[in-house]
Length: 486
Ligand code: C2O
Ligand code: CU
Image 1 (cartoon, protein in one colour):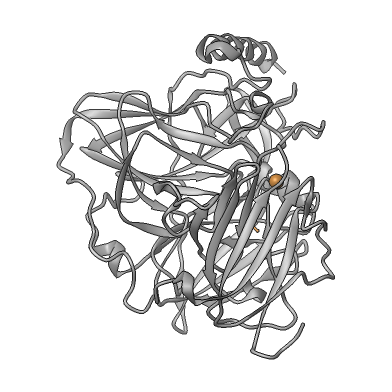
Image 2 (cartoon, helix red, strand yellow):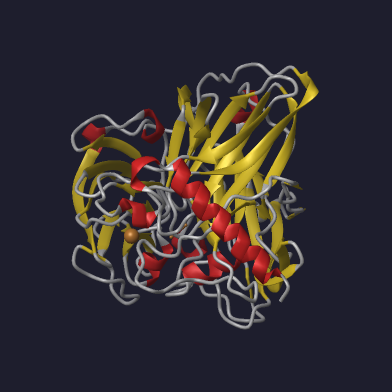
């Protein structure tokens, strides 16, 4: 294939840049190659829907196809309703939704609604596989604050591969508070989804997963946004909101700009209490952040990932800790429409009871090491934890392993009470469903299991580094009625 020399040449350039750009330590073992920012950012289309009997109904079809990420190279990929990634689903708080998920692949997959509060049988985890040729139709009511959620497959033992091949999309929720907020909100114009992923291409241009023992999984030398390598976005307003999703399988990023700060406005589960001015936000796989950045007319700047602080990991350079690279170019026009600084009143809905630590009835401990949580690998037939509906709990989570891990809990948005006994930094102070775990620190997470009992179908908690998840770093919990058992 003709692309081969070109790829090698670009990789060499990447090495040179990584070495010169990374201070005393030199390059990472997986340098990200530098690219031209010459392609317009693809914006995932908003999914169509129809309202059938009061239910907003979407269709999603998992299918295979090919994508041209690199000029002249056709790469086999998977996507929803297209060859790569999927459309953006969007719904309103209080609406009942249904999604008809059809699997046109020749192996089973599933679709999990990451960050969504919903019944376990609708969750799309490993217990809800969709066989080839089948359609699965979960339905639930949107009952949580406005947020940037996402969806992706969760088949037992194969999540990494399905996500890596391209099965992922955003699921945006709106509510009265988000509508009243002063925030850029024109989808794809000044409210821009940015799904960041890293890839490795083999000599034939196919996506390659590297299962060579490298931690925390495959770190790609090619970074793309919404499936576009080297993307730019034309900015037409004084401020732009980026909805960042780390849709990678293993890499942790530290997003920011070399020449300006930004306002962090929302984390995984929705708006913060107020905007926070930051230079950098670290996102591990599965985490989201909404940021608002200001530009002057005619300016060009780039969203980048600076070398992320992985938290006291000795061999951090081998795990992406020394990688610094540009991600997305923003090009401001000469005439920018006014766009006021972000602000909002109450971010919480009147009936969202405040989560209070003193209400916690139970404290559970989770220790992550190797590929185990509390000494066990995932077993589809074993229930690890049983929670009583209505309870507020503290989950004390610790990474006891000198390798990056993270912790994601299905069904809930949690608050991080403390990190090693101290108040969390602002980027961890909002609603979260996934958190990066620095080794040897203890994260106290506060959450409430409001409803949706099921004595048979469990929810998952797991490391969101997808190789780790597939290799067993996952457990299952049931939410039951008081007095009920598994
Ligand atoms: Cu985003 Cu259990 O997953
Ligand atoms: Cu892990």
